[in-house]
Length: 475
Ligand code: AMP
Image (tube, rainbow, N blue to C red; front, side, top):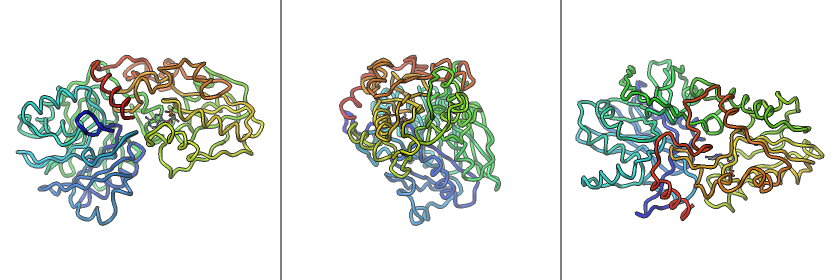
């Protein structure tokens, strides 16, 4: 996918990780941590490491296991590292946008890895170009790195605090300079970032707490919106770089779909939240049925919750090939449709003659649900009732989850009865916004723009239309 400059248009739903105070092999810990964040980005992976003087980096297209092996890890010597898994849905990939982004500055080397999306990146990029900066990629991270390098301040954390107010939108960042790792979150708190302590005394920050567990950390807590954490050797210090925004905007979709079920987000276990989403769904959209089954894997806890609340037997109807990757990665609708069939087989013995409730977390473009309903019917299901654990997604996300454009979102084009017809289900029920928030256990503090169209940070019309142009032309 290219923009008008011929550059790739980046999708920034990603995983980030930073490690400090861990002998000379921070890269290996980062590697295993990135494995645990693989679901947040399968397009590319990278690790930058510092030995206190120089920064070395290796990054490549593909899964973490494809980007790295012993040979690639061996030269990455040092006790501080940052890593990144990059997500993309459609279009061409480019090495230029693979992170961490590394730059030489007058204050020494700097590497940056970013999860999120700035809504004013285009203006910031133009300002840099006007000042004569040469930009190599279309990635927000390069803009962040160059702005940081050009800001006055004694230390990197001073410069970060000085420049942060100019960044509008979502950023969970890990930054590596020669002598420390710095982590921060935007003042709205859009995307997650947590910190943990290693038994050996070092610290790790990661997009999800599951990655902290994987590398053997005790989880300390979430990094707060606007907080700056500086990890130097085995010491981690923190201060508020910016006041948290009065309206917080955590991403609801992390609960619904994106995070792993072992993550804790906003103090809530994602697994428990998903069970409650399923239970609320059973209350809001009950149906006479024989079995409840999930679309694996993300909907399993929700289907368990639906079954427990409704008293309908939980079983499995799909077997998923876990090695085929997300269907979202395929670039065209046609390939996406093939992807669904490539990805799932059915268990006809469980399905034949049964009235089925199929629970899924979301319908986005509407290309997955229809083929799944067909697979169930082909396997002999007598009825298929589809239940979705969030409201209809009718608006694009500008803060880091690639939902597609207005045109691509089926709920922007069609009402619920039409979507039900489109996917060929006997009935379709979406969880309401109110019930979804009840399951999460919060009244406010969340970004629900993809459901409501009400964006917590003003999104300029130009961005809306440019996103539509990029995705419309190239998606
Ligand atoms: P769609 O065919 O576009 O309606 O895709 C919906 C399916 O993709 C659901 O089964 C979700 O579990 C999954 N999904 C939802 N959002 C995303 C996303 N941003 N990236 C990848 N997969 C997603």
